[in-house]
Image (cartoon, rainbow, N blue to C red; front, side, top):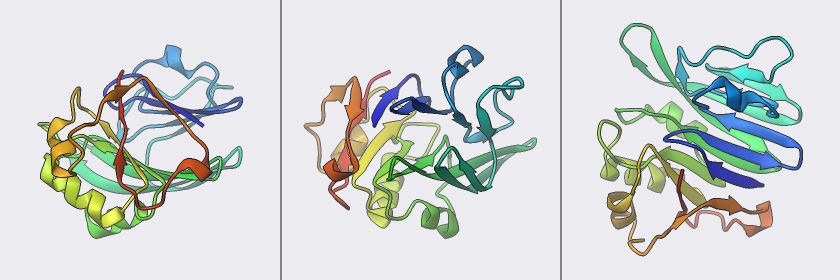
Length: 190
């Protein structure tokens, strides 16, 4: 699997011919993907007929041998709903928490428990602060942490005792490369 960061919270997960987009910021990106996962609803417009499968809310889904479980993480005024996801893709369990501002409910944290990879806000305003993010990481114990919604996750790296973290363009790995509960931060640049 290859994981690249395309923007603040926009990530591409690629395994062979299958691509999953998380929070893409424009419809031009949809081409070639089989699944789009949006953490905030309302979100971008759903793809036109024949486009990738689109998920933007809680529930359980099974798309092209990719299993997804979504749980509402936060309600923000005027019908805005933010969803946390657990995605099982290529035998790798990926947790995704979008741009939340408050610590999630324990039921949401449960969905993110024991993930191989956890993508979540990197601790900058207006989202969860670094100490709240570090607390959640310690509760869920992922193998790899990928900060989103940050240009430089230095406060989060400090909270986790990993100040020497350096930015990388992409993360390429297989399930066997992930050390369970290692809580290693991989800082991807956009």
